Amino acid sequence: MISSNDLKPGMTIQQDGEIFVVLEQSQNKTARSAMVVKAKVRNLRTGSNVELSWGGGDKITPAHIEKKEMQYLYDTDDALVFMDNETYEQIEIPKDRLKWEMNFMKPNDNVNISMFESEILGVILPDKVALQIVECEPAVKGDTATSASKNATLESGLEIKVPLFINQDEMVLVNTSDGKYSGRAKD
Image 1 (cartoon, rainbow, N blue to C red):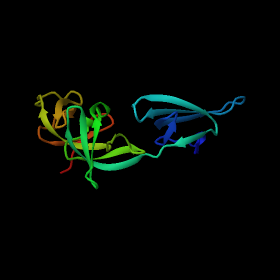
Image 2 (cartoon, rainbow, N blue to C red):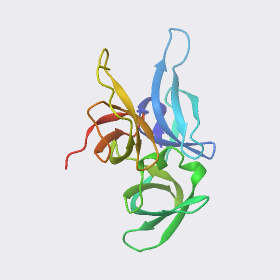
Image 3 (cartoon, rainbow, N blue to C red):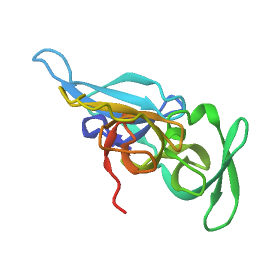
Image 4 (cartoon, rainbow, N blue to C red):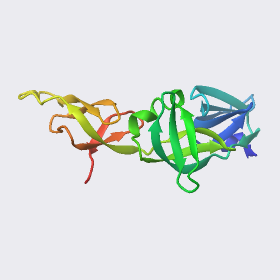
């Protein structure tokens, strides 16, 4: 058990049968009232954000989240199939739980799967991924009054804005938190 006073962003906790990751935490203590600890948390099963509160010093159950590296094999109509690199066991994760993550994965990529007591929660993306541009608008000459950008489609199907000097078939780095161009990928 951990004290509510010790909550920090990134910690995983159990509350009312659900699993949450702490995003933000604040403590409020006034002269007359007892301390109140509030935390903005994300439900790891549903993805929804909620705010929870406890009294100062209340005990909270931590949740131990395991990470296992697996290889993304292929896409069925309603799920993505992953293979454990050690046991070769295959698992399926429903597509509706991985809508955002699908923008950054391609077959044969190694990804980290998060699990809680053998229940699969989802995919943990790296901060940035390298993806190839499969379609890109041509640069318009003289279109440089501001920080000019053009539309590009990545091999995963994600559409992003890239600078004018980026061309089709180039590898670019993309932030997985917001889906924006981050730079050219090193060869």
